[in-house]
Length: 431
Image 1 (cartoon, rainbow, N blue to C red):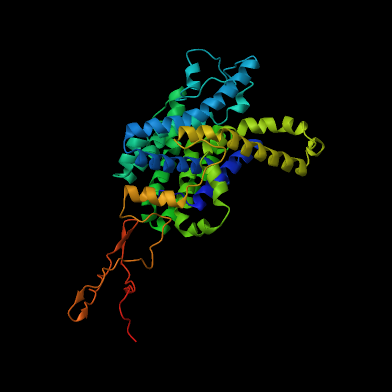
Image 2 (cartoon, rainbow, N blue to C red):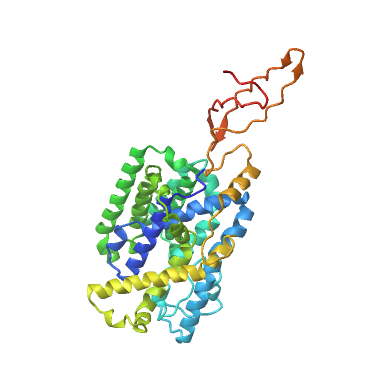
């Protein structure tokens, strides 16, 4: 199983966050068609959830870790946003999509199985709420989903496609909160399952031509459906068309993840992986704070000496974009420890790198016959040789050392290598 994400996959997560930040700061209908940002983030979540499930060993132990990993950063975000909306008077307008805060729906700020209530002034701060809702449902459903995916992967992948098709053609017609939950799950469950398959290594077994060709067809179908239904939804943006978003995200993620084995050379690039790991381990924290920081950037720049350069020119737009990135990285460093704490990692300002010695020792304690991923098969090893036994004709010859057995590397048998004969102390050497 692929227990360690590659540098390439982690770079995809960073690109996805960059696409989300750019689309939030400069919303355009075509921006979501440039890169499947949401699909990549859900695929990364599916891979992480599958890894956490395997490490936990049971569904109950997994849920004890998965729920805090999501809820702790969400609670910090909710506490800040709700406070700001409450101080602003909390005006609501059902037509605009806002709702009053009461005991009937306020609990959703603690456990967001549906979208929690938002004030009218706070609508620009809570864009990530749909992502948290879908992510929580998929995280809770991961134990049965992974169990089914490892037995009937194609049948399970067909379920969200069929459900979305039934809704699209009008056979099924969910309404209200039920529609939001069902359509969100159908749109991104496939990406979640692809991420779990990537973690298992099953995605590599799919022929490259099939994966790349099928992904390209799905991506084109998603764009075509969005353009064809522009009059129905009022825009060709994918955020307004769940069926188009499902096809585009599924195809894009399939292509991007299938390219991973060919881009493993990025793992040898020094200095890149620590930065990518910092963001990859705190993806949810970064995603949650994108919208509030986009709103906060202009007044923050106004309080700095850079205020005269923050203009409506392209240079001023680049300055604002760079300032938003600085604030986002600051939020990841300052608040990411909550995600560390929820995920069972030791909290810290930066993600700690595992020492190779400890990783090897831990791997040996769990499975002594398996060589860890970072370890290398030794060319030679010191083999204890019994001392020569004295006899009437002088020292007895030392018995030949047997050929070493095969090593096990990631479950694949690698033939053992013939080692050089050890030099016995006191034994006369030829010549």
